[in-house]
Length: 313
Image (tube, rainbow, N blue to C red; front, top):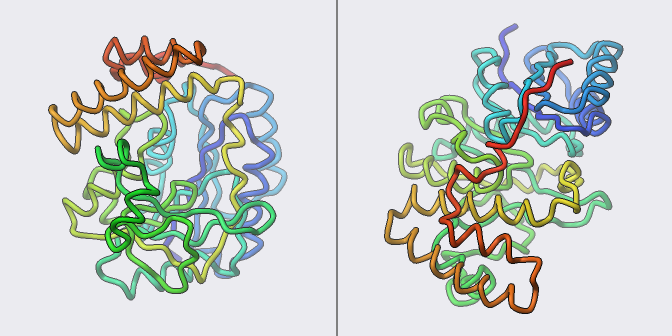
């Protein structure tokens, strides 16, 4: 039987979550012969990788392979390693390792929806937290108006264009983009737009993909609320590196802005952020490194991607 769905899961120092994630796929699905799971280890520490490797071998899940990257290239690039190893499939399911399947046969339900919805390029189930409470699954494209006026204001003044992120949708709905913790892509559309932009180490990948789907393929992102999943959010990001994450957010945001909206928009946003954080660091000195980054332009050369080392087993 040919592979219909390739599930790609990136692990980074959270092997136990990854093992639970993979197990939940096989525990909740029938006809798993047409599903493959590709786990990409993004240069985790030796102990974590060896645990992942040994437990996957013990579990002996069908159609499952583990790939070890010697360097952490980031979220998008890690997923692209999985894409390059995937079979010729109809759909890619990019699933965070800190998730659990809730809906029986969720992947097949999503496939049926996508098959029946020609203008869909990607969809997502409804995200829930570990207590099965609502968690926002959609968002609006990153733009000058979103960054300066903020989402809440835009949702109030133009709810048609900016539907509430806090709304529990009762039917499949086209949105700007869905969260990267569970993205179910039409493989042809994903491949045609070139997949993840690997210049982005972390953050804004979903907005970038959604914009390219719309511009290049005239395809939309959909939330499909009849299916649900649990997301233990950001388990691989340590609070101790909070300022580094904020730096990476701004680097990715500014790159995304220039890519999609041009030089003038990029410069306007850069200067806005310089003023904002220049004032902020007067009362919160911990933000000075972020302000200094913005003064220097916050280019991709300052990304955490450039600081990753090669790891051997």
